[in-house]
Length: 334
Image (cartoon, rainbow, N blue to C red):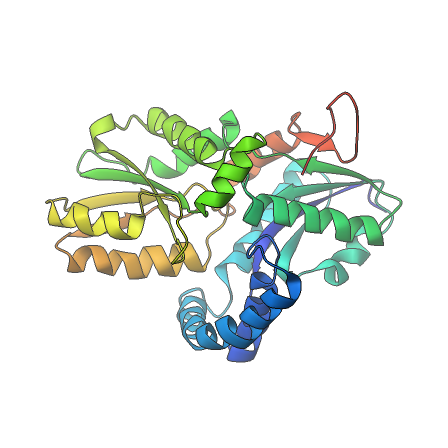
């Protein structure tokens, strides 16, 4: 029986690109209170009766393209599984993928947790915000605590400025980086400004964490300030989200004469719909249609060996803290 098991927690993915699976996934995702802060009954009606029916067709089409590009499976699932295998070798104990929405969920992994003395909950989000890190961490801790009361729980805190993470990002970027690029773009998932303001008041300054990662990465690969752009993507109207928006900026760059841009998205530990399809395919076409010549997306860290080694080091660091309440502040907060 395992002494320690690590759960690699990510957002999740539909089991397949058909409308039924996508509808189920979107409903679970958008009914998360951290996604849409409103009374539960109101949110359920809005999500299940209006938003999901209006989006499921388009989302299913996007997932069909994504699954086709990735050999019939979700790249998020494929890369998460591969990373877990490599990380298990590095750590010397079982590592299990676990999704906040969809599968594998607690029922899928509980047998692998049976008998564990210690379970490390490791959200794959370098930066801390309500809709990703906090939601995933709280959910995983709640589910694991209920099903595995015998185990001590530990939680990986955000690692946005850890040297191992920055070094691994730089290692991934360097093969793509040349002086021929007009711009290097470091982009992060946007969040509502209301989330940013509320989080910053409690020490969870997402924007500052993202900009810290961007600064450290740019320094590590030697990008001059005049070639660096930091953006945020995937805002949803009509709310005000963090800017500048990658989707509008890339058009402006092309129109201003930028021909070749290199894009890296450090907030994604593994590739997914947003990186592969929304940015790497759809936004690349937007850039070239506006007059640009080449829009290159650096793949996420995925299951690269150097990342598995770096993540193992992060998981051995003091960023992994006991879960619980403690007056000395040594326990992990979520």
